[in-house]
Length: 511
Figure 1 (cartoon, rainbow, N blue to C red):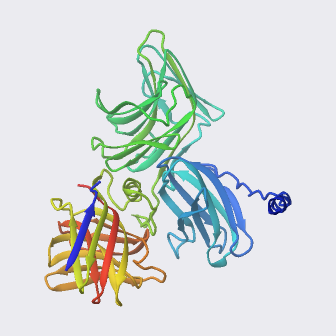
Figure 2: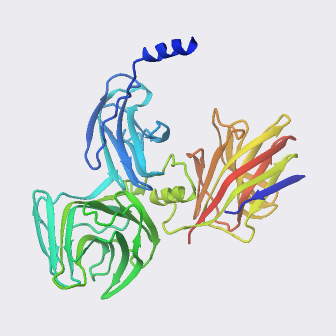
Figure 3: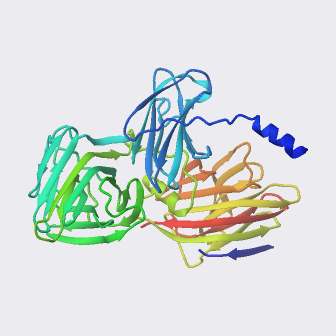
């Protein structure tokens, strides 16, 4: 017997005064600022000591934090919000080969202040170097423009590099000047950011960055104008196709002449950033191959037009690899469907270019007998590759073990897969085919119980399944790709009554 419900588918006062006046105010020490692309040194001299830095992060900004230890120091890096709440941490990403702590391609949930904390794992002490980069954790380019070097003009443009500033100037009606360095290794998946120190224009100005440029000149271009708008386009030969045409965004202020312009390219997904805030995520497959990066300045369509841009730096970061493989995230950021999906794409758990298939704000499922009660959601949809996520909590009547679960690969009452957490802290993934259940993942963690709100997330990408509980990776396994429905489930291992509440169940899919 089961019941289900779905909601949504998207004098004492005098003494007190004396006491208050006698209290001296205590001021919290402001942590030093953590710069981008500039290593800082630190040292933990006593066990469990923490060193903290602060920085201003943008909405959906992508950052990487790497801590390189000296000697035998075993560092732990922690990202916290402005209130000191922990968001994510890492101890080792390639143990025992190296002790570096690394958080790579972390997506920040909002515009605001953040804290980066370094301490020693298990009371370890020692010196270290901390570096924060935008995008990924390895450099492909860190151009400081001490000279022009191998940068060459592609169109009619004057260029000069002095004291770390590249100056580009173009004159005429609707003229495009480009600078390209053909010695830079072409990249496919990367984060690139250009820092504008100043840009001026007679009649107006447009400045941009080209990327994935091919030998035949095919390229993407992201541009910003003095009007306070931006555009993304793709060139194939002499033909320009606009992907997003002069859109406005609150992050862009008309008339600003100093800013950063960034792009994160991953597969067919292109994310555009301005002053480290994400403007948009766009999917396009025109140029899927690796290409080079360049700089573009454009004049307005008027007589005597001129645009002059001063560029303070151009960097490109790429994903860290270990033995030719991307780093498997042991922990992911908490957040809504869009933030988490972007994080999974950027951290190479899923391909770029996916989309939100559906989101159910709340559902309920009850069971009073041993077994599995299933609740497929959005019945007309079927999935092979997907992300399925929910926040579940349960109440129980009687003695025994019960669990809430994600349901997927569902075809009928004897063909489905479940990923669960029960009221004893045990979690697992179980596959049913006919009358047989096969246990693919199983474990127990002290302090976990589905009686408390718990985040469950499953990624099925091809023949590999990843299971995260409370944003921590608890297991991965090979799985047969099977198309099926997604939803929720209740599991009773004993004859008790289990009521599961599921909040914000969502599915992300890709081709």
